[in-house]
Amino acid sequence: MADKKIIAVVGATGSQGGGLARAILADPNGGFAVRAITRDTNKDNAKALASQGAEVVSANLDDVESLKKAFAGAHGVFAVTNFWEHFSGEKEKAQAKNIAEAAKAAGVKHVIWSTLEDTRTLMDSSDKRMPMLQEKYRVPHFDAKAEANAHFAGVPVTYLVTSFYWDNLYMFGLAPKKGDDGVYSWTFPMGNSKLAGMAVEDIGKVAYGIFKAGSQYIGKTVGITGENLTIEEMGQKLSKGLGIGPVKYNAVEPDAYRGFGFPGADEMGNMFQVYRDFEKQCLGARSADVARQLNPQLQTFDQWLAKNKSRIPL
Ligand SMILES: NC(=O)c1ccc[n+]([C@@H]2O[C@H](COP(=O)([O-])OP(=O)(O)OC[C@H]3O[C@@H](n4cnc5c(N)ncnc54)[C@H](OP(=O)(O)O)[C@@H]3O)[C@@H](O)[C@H]2O)c1
Image 1 (tube, rainbow, N blue to C red):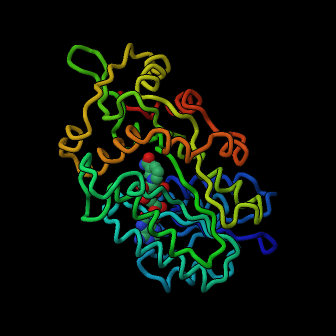
Image 2 (image 1 turned 135 degrees about the vertical axis):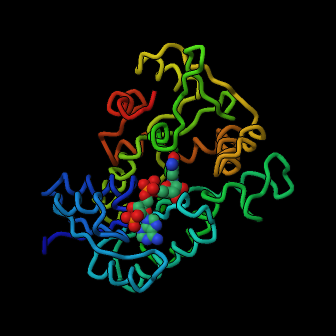
């Protein structure tokens, strides 16, 4: 362990960071070691990482001093913030600022910041197609992460632009639902545009590829996807892969979706509308080829589905 480069992984007990932690642990001769960061070292995911050989330390993204201690002596830091825990763009930015400040103080050699694009650059501030949220954002969890990029100025950083997790189908309840008539259907405001999606496990594996590449990606933005598919195409694949008959796509307008009332419906409505109305820019910002170079095991939707179908509630 002493001769290995330590990667301090924020979010190691979660999806993105967990994927990176597991990728490093699965490659004992790769020259890297995991320092898993969590607020609760006693939780099951933390204990599982410890049993697989990770060092598990406690720190909180709201407490910069705890991060400085957690990053001390590390070669690299993987940084992700969790918008969905608090739904606040301002809080995400404050947490990213703490991460950047602590990484500077600890003198780490490479930070990967899991970010997203600033959707406000895609339309005029006077554009009325979607509401502003939290006063100044179009898609707060995108725009705030993009704003937070500036905090990493002066840090040896790679900006990792991620994609929609296919795992949302079981994690966020987005799978098709069976109607009283026995027909499965699902509802999105995506028209016929393609959605850049990927297996969340692959985000961590790509991040590992970036760390392994040394300084090559420092100062660069790396946008990744697994496969870009329309909702209709995903439905056809689900129908075949799950053996559930045709999946009916209810293509609603974003305004209708925003009005559905579940927590974050307005945010998700804006996000899907950005993917629908600015398909070229969203897909252009992400590359499956780059993702595959960094992670040769990159999954397609069908491969992801074959592996995860038992998790999808039917
Ligand atoms: N869902 C999607 O399709 C998608 C796509 C692209 C990007 N994203 C972005 O991904 C982010 C979430 O990442 P994820 O899915 O990997 O999250 P996740 O699985 O929900 O896990 C969240 C992780 O963040 C850690 N964490 C949260 N608050 C913390 C704090 N104050 N201090 C220390 N650690 C903290 C948690 O650690 P402990 O609880 O153990 O402390 C946990 O490991 C969101 O911001 C979202 O915008 C999501």
